[in-house]
Image 1 (cartoon, one colour):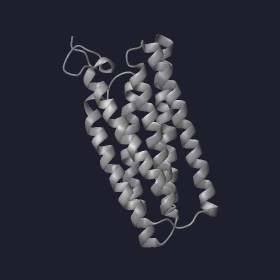
Image 2 (cartoon, rainbow, N blue to C red):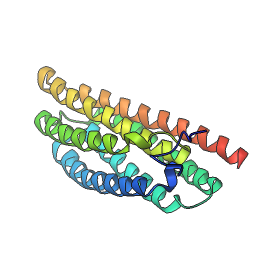
Image 3 (cartoon, rainbow, N blue to C red):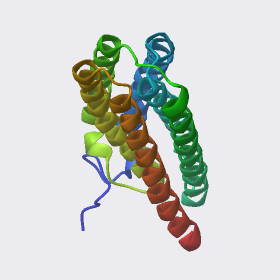
Length: 204
């Protein structure tokens, strides 16, 4: 019977050398974009860019943890996924609180910088998705990597649209709405990963 979590052989996804190489590539891409977005988010005054930069940082930590626990038993990988899920939830809550603060004290961000950086981030995340596409199924640790990259790509599209809306309406609220969406995605992904990890811990 063929294995459902294999990449061209009978080897599980998490043990595949190709998967390890893919993780290193997306780790470097995400860490680079974290530094780009944190600088441009502060410069442009965009809450959604700052929120997205935290996603890139969280994903970088996600990929690094995944690389560390790849050779370990399922119970250890599930525990690592639990930590990642809780971390993602913390990021989501931080984004939510920051956005609420900016509703009252934020200024209109630079729409051009939002759109340009958002488009660059989208290119990075689409590249990461294509690299990880064949590895999207597996245990909670493998699944968490795919979920993070998928949500980031969705968030980047939202940031670009927010930049356009800020330009059209001359308002800070499209940026803040996207930040709320990013917070929701982070919390939703956190719930999914924790639930799957918890199931694996019970059977391991």
